[in-house]
Structure formats: C-alpha cells, structure tokens
Amino acid sequence: MDNKELIVDYLNAVYQNTRTGIQSLEEIMTKVEDDTFKKELALLQDEYQVIARECELFSKAEKITPIKDNTWFEKSKLWASVNMSTMMDRSNRKIAELLLLGTFMGIITCIKDESDHKGISKEIDELLAKLKEVERGSIEKLIPYLD
Image 1 (cartoon, helix red, strand yellow):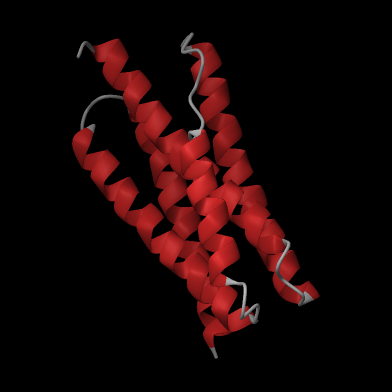
Image 2 (cartoon, rainbow, N blue to C red; image 1 turned 120 degrees about the vertical axis):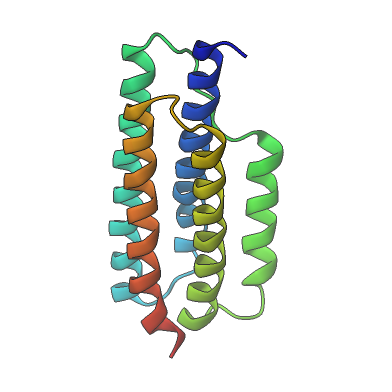
C-alpha cells in the first residue's frame, strides 16, 4: 500500500470504531428507562459524534472520499446483539455490562489500529488518542452502574 492508501485505511478504522460507539448507544438508549443513565449515555454519544465529525473534516481536507461507515452486516450484528441481550433484562446493570464489553472491544481495536499504522499520520494518531480517552472515560462512568 502506498502512503495515501495507508492514511485512508487508518482514518476509516478510527471512523468505524467511533461509529460503532455511536450506533451502539443509539440502539441501546431505546432500552434505557432510567433518565439519569440515559442522559449520561447521551453525553457519551455526543463525545463520539465530535470525533466522528473530526474524522469527516479530516477526510474532506485530505480529499479522502468517501469515508467508510460500518457495513450493513456489521450494523445488523450490532442490532441483533443489543436486542437479544436486552430481551429479558433491561436493567442499568445489564446495559452497563453490554456497553463496557463494547468499550473494551473498542479500546482493543484502537490499540491494534495504532500498532498497525505507526508513523502514518500524526493527525489521525490524535483522533485515535481522543477516541481512546473517550472510551477510558466511558469505563469510569459505566462501572458504577454495575452495582
């Protein structure tokens, strides 16, 4: 791959990870009954949306089009997973557990993407660092809901 292709690959990886967070929260918030918890999740979703928007702006500035969202299949898997996991239990505890599992997967993906794209783009490294920070903060916010 040439450098431009590596940049595109890296940007898409960060964007898709961010979009997974947004889509997970969109889907799961319909299951949340606790208003305080729902507000916390909406704030988290806003943080992901800021990073997604920064990815889109970087894409436009670098003339990388189109930036790739998750596939229909990935979105369907997410939808099925959320709906199956919350069919019998919509408690804050269960929802926090699901979100924590997804967040840990997101952090793992960030670490792998960072390793796979060393030295490719300082700007995308910064976007990835923001994403990891949001996900780490998410863990801190979700853990209390496990009680």
